[in-house]
Amino acid sequence: MITPPRDRTIVTEEARPILQKYVRLHFDEVRQKHVAMAPEKLFWPDEIGVAILRKCDGDHSISDIAAALAQDYEAPREVILNDVLEFVQEWSDKLLLKI
Image 1: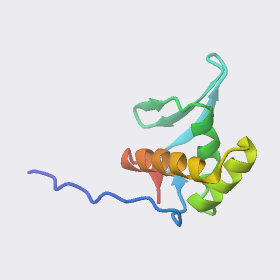
Image 2 (image 1 turned 45 degrees about the horizontal axis):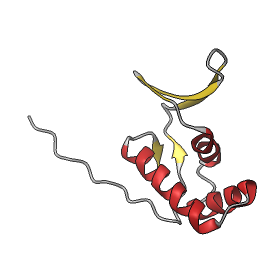
Image 3 (image 1 turned 90 degrees about the vertical axis):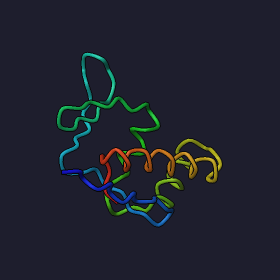
């Protein structure tokens, strides 16, 4: 039996992402890096990715996350917003974030 393709969730500024229940963000002491652990998979987000993931709590919108990161990194909100949208879309497509 062939499984039909799933509908892709398109991430917008209003989306409120949260890590899926089966994904855990953990600091690996040996490598001194954060790792996102999912069943049978490991993902190694960079520093900015970790900052985004920490704010993906289901309460804050993409717009809120971008504004906070723009302030934290003293960068233009529009640039940060595009990066956050792209990152969250990629992780949503991999079924690591729920929108």
